[in-house]
Image (cartoon, rainbow, N blue to C red; front, side):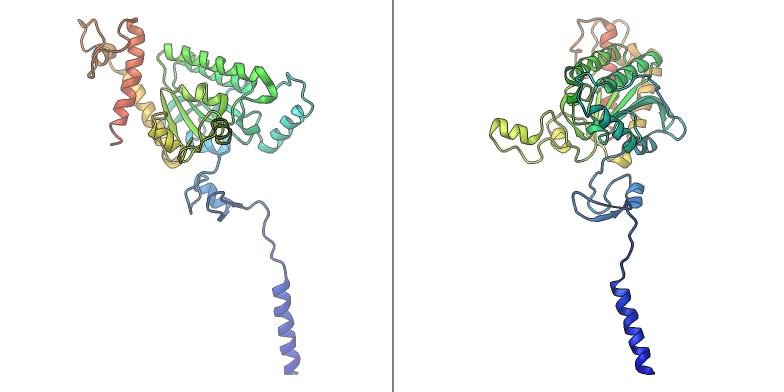
Length: 336
């Protein structure tokens, strides 16, 4: 009898070893950098940053809005425009429909008005999950419309860039968006309004060559890949080895292309401080006389470091450029 009990116990142990453990599907993700298996909920709570190696995962528009915009303040611009198929490609419309179902997004960018720590701002956020965040006619129109609204409402604008470049499925129409967004930003600059560009991984092609590089202040996330053509294309074209870290945010900061690398956990606070400084400077009484010209009798717009490079042009333009210069250097002084 004792032998029978031992056999039953052994059979039970064997069955337990051979039994399959059911692991919930879609709950885990592998880090591309350290290859560690991560629980998705923990990764989400850590702002999509690997807790082991600090690798930055790409963020969905919804998660980015949750992180940056004050709760309940975001109002999306509802433009009644839809993606077209100008080249008549067979599978393009099906692909757009499939991506909308998969990502729950209408297009590769979401634009609207919200608050960042109480500061009003027009914001655009791109998502690489939608056809690699490529810029077609709809993306270009939404960004241009947002810039025009920023001018109308006299608000600063922040654009989170994340794109592989112009959308090749729309041909020359997509390339036209580069000129379109650039022209809109020229109007924003003349209106004296602040534009902050935030470069995230990846930012390439026509987006880099247009609005992504035109910010009054250009921030970037750590490790973000930023450039025009990809590394393999450049390497094959010039036939030479590229420098270590080429096209990373750190490399571009060292060479003066961007102003500061900001960790994801600090991004909201950094943006809010810049926006508050912008509002404070604009609210100063006699701002132009006090900050830009050093006195009402001055004919040249001298400010600290010498005569303004733009002093021969109308004072309004001088004021805009030096005002934006002040925002950056006053804020930068707090970093050192």
